[in-house]
Structure formats: C-alpha cells, structure tokens
Amino acid sequence: MHLALFIIFGVFCVAGALNLLLQRHPINSALSLIVVMSSLAVLYLLLGAEFLAAAQVIVYSGAIMVLFTFVIMLLNAGKEERTHGSRLAYIAGFPGAAALLGILTFVFLSRGGDFGQARLGEYIVTTSDLSRVLFRDLLLPFEVTSVLILIAILGAVALARKEH
Amino acid sequence: METGLLAFLLINLAKVIVVVVIMLMAVAYTVLLERKLVGRIQNRWGPSRVGPFGLLQPLVDGAKLFLKEDLMPAAVERPLYILAPIIALSCALISIAVVPFGADIRWKGVDLFQISDINIGLLIILGVTSIGVYGIALSGWSSNNKYSLLGSLRASAQVISYELALGLSLIGVVMRAGSLRLRDIVGVQATHGLLSWNFFGGFQFVAFFIYLMAAYAETNRAPFDLPEAESELTAGYHTEYSSMKFAMFFMAEYANMITVGCVATLLFFGGPTSPFGHLFDHVLTGTAAQAVLPIFWFVLKVFFFLFLYIWVRGTLPRFRYDQLMGFGWKFLVPVAIANIVVTGLWMGLRLPVQ
Picture 1 (cartoon, chains in turn purple, blue):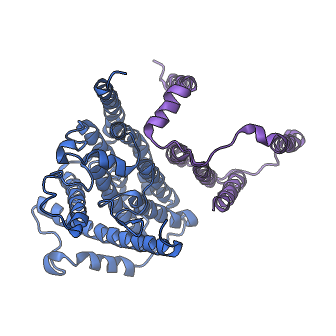
Picture 2 (cartoon, rainbow over the protein chains, first blue to last red; picture 1 turned 90 degrees about the vertical axis):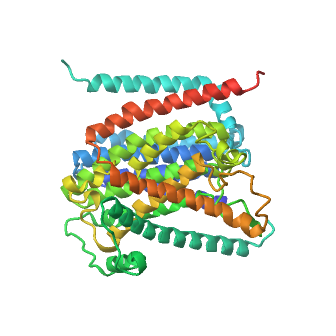
Picture 3 (cartoon, rainbow over the protein chains, first blue to last red; picture 1 turned 180 degrees about the vertical axis):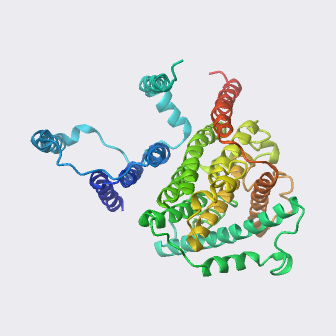
C-alpha cells in the first residue's frame, strides 16, 4: 500500500515538474507546480510527517501558489515564446545535471545505511510534542528563520515605499 | 481490526454516501431557508407557491438548473473552465469528512458518526478550504471576461488575507486542547456542559468572533461578498457559467457555509455535547437516546450558525474594498495574535510550578 502510493505520487510529482517546464502558458505551469507541491505533501504523509504534510498543503499549495496565480492573472501574462535556449545550457547544463544525478545515486547506493531511518509509527501527534521539537530542540534554526523572513518583509516594504 | 476488510469498506462507503446525500439536501434547504428568511427580513413572503410553505421549492430549482441549456462561451480556456466548478464543489464537500457529528459510538469497530478520525483533522479542514480558492480563481480567469477576472482577483486577495486571521484565531483553541484532532477538541469541552465550552469557560470568545468574521470572508458571504458584488461586477466570477456548472458554484458556497458552521460548533460550542453537561444523563439512559441526542444538539448548533449567516446577510451592507483589506490586516490579525499571547500567559500562570 505504502509502496503503491509512493510510486503513484512520485510519478505525479515528476510528471508535474516536467509539465511545469514544458507548458507554454504561465498559468498552466503554476497549476503544474501546485500538483508537484500537493504530491510532495502526500509523500511527507507517507513518511509519517502529518503536520508537515498539512502545512505543505496550507502554506505552499494554498497560500503561496494562490499568490502566484493571482500575480499571473493580475498581469494577464500571455503565452511564452519558445526560444532555442542559450548555448551555455546545452554545454554545461546537461552534463552538470547528469553528474549531479550520478553523484546522488552513487552516494545513496554506497552509503545508504548512514543516513538514519525514518521510523514509521513514531509520529509527532500531539501539539506538545510538536512544540517541544519547534521551540526546544530546533529553537535556534526556528528563530533564525523567523528573523530571515522578517528581514525579507522589511526589504519588501522598503522597496514598495513611495518616495516623498 | 475485528471486521473483515470487505465489511469495513462497505460500512465506510455507506457512511460516505449517507453523509454526502444529507449534505446536499442540507445545501438545498439552506438555500430555501435563506430565501425565506431574507424575504421576511425584507417584509415579503419568499417562496411560498411550491408545496406547503414552499417546501418543495429546492426540488423545482434543481430541476430548473438541470434542464437549462449549458452554454459554453467560445473564447474560454476550456479545460480550466470545466475544472473550476469541480474543484470548488469537491473541496467544499471533502472537508465534512473529518467532522464528528455525533457521539463516539462504534459498530463493528467502525465509528458511526464520523467518516474519518484524523489526528490533524483541523489542519485538513484548513488545507482543503485553502485549495478551494482555486475553483474561484480559475473560473474567473478561464471565463475570459473582465468582470469574472475582477471577481476572482478580489476573491483570491480576500481569501489570502483572511486565511491568516482565521488560522491564528484557532491557535488558542488548539492550545487549550493540546491536540489538532477534532474529537479531542470536543472532549476538552464536554465536562461541564456550556460552562466548559471554549466560548464561555475557555474565554475564547475573542477568537470566536475573529474566526466568524474571517470565515464569512473566506466563504465570500455578505458583508464580504465583493467577489460577486452584483452592482459592480454583474455576478463576479461565475458570470459566464450556466446550468449545472453554475449550480456547482452555488452548492459549493452553501456547503462551505455548513462546514464553517460545523467547525465553529466543534471548536467553540462543544460540538455534539449537550449544553447541560451530564445533568440529565439519568433521565435518558437508552442507547438510542445516547446516540440521537448528540446529533440533535449538533444539528441545532449548526442551524444556529446558518441562521446567523443569513441574518447578517439580510442586515449588513457590503464592505468597501480598502475597508475590507484594512479590517483584515490592521484589526483582525493583531487581535488574533494578542489572543494567542493572552491565552498562553493564562495557561502558563495556571500551570503548577515545576
């Protein structure tokens, strides 16, 4: 059951990502990205990360992608023109992607045992467990991320402010 | 698991079918209720010709919408135009699946009065409603009509803005219950009847009013119905839709209202528990009474919220757009954050010193 769901949603995820690149209209690409995000949420769910899966749907598929589609609709973006792509992409891109894939495959196959296992069944269920992870075990990364987001917000406000 | 897989599947399938049928009937009769009540508020009768007191009006409306010609404008973006009402209606119907509408009574190991009991039930409802926005956004864009596009732009902006306040307002409740599972949240409020409801005993009334206002905005109902403001945008995002596709948007709107009523009942008004607590438990001791009474209380509370929806619609004028945004960001969000801080302090002070 787990394996079947993993394969189905893995295929959805990859197909969505490919479709995102191949579609010529921005809104279709944005919709493909929603499919990718939602399939990722299902994969998180299969790993037992219920909260993360729900947060993925609410934040990414729900809020952020609505903003994307909002901007596309507001600017009324038309179809993209197909170009031949830059020469650099052909020279560096394909070998680079192949090399990255090769390295990742090599590492996963040879050192797979060192990564630690996601144990199914030990889910973070209660909100107190969740808060313990967020506000005690991972407090520093959590706070640093909040400061990062705050800086981004201040930057956006500074850029959008009208000069008087 | 004491039952076979087949029996489990059959019982669950039956449960899903029953709930969907009841939900659709409830949607049809909420429309009638709205027309009757708004009629009385405006000093007229409302539908009164079909059946006694107009009670068969929903059937006639349904037949009319089925038999109407399904127009498809020439310049629409065809796949998205068809997909949009499907997204809207299916998302509206899915979220009812995690709502517990009765006592925790099991038959052959299957919970009879809830389709699925999920640990993160509350988040599932939030997630599904946030996906439902795409129905409105895509319908407006794919219709290739300026009024539709303006309507869906307004809807997207409004829903994103108010989702924040809505999510923040629920955190106080989650903090009190210590769980995101809806049955646990109800269980916390079940001990002393209405004194232990989150609204009264839990001092979450601020959160409740924030939730209510944000939810009205999320469901695009008056006074936040700018996406379909008929005086400015013809009919907003569903201007180009006709026949059953229009009916699907219509049903989605009312199904969302019912879901909001259910969630408000569960989170702030004790869900299916009795307002009298266990005072009258010795009077009605039969199993049937124990099973039926919680459903009665639940339906009564949800009905109250539907009534409130219609009452507000009949009473309040529509917001202006800048007022809407200012209200959401400058009033609701700060108050919701303040509510979290106060709830946290209160809970921290009540904790025993370790």
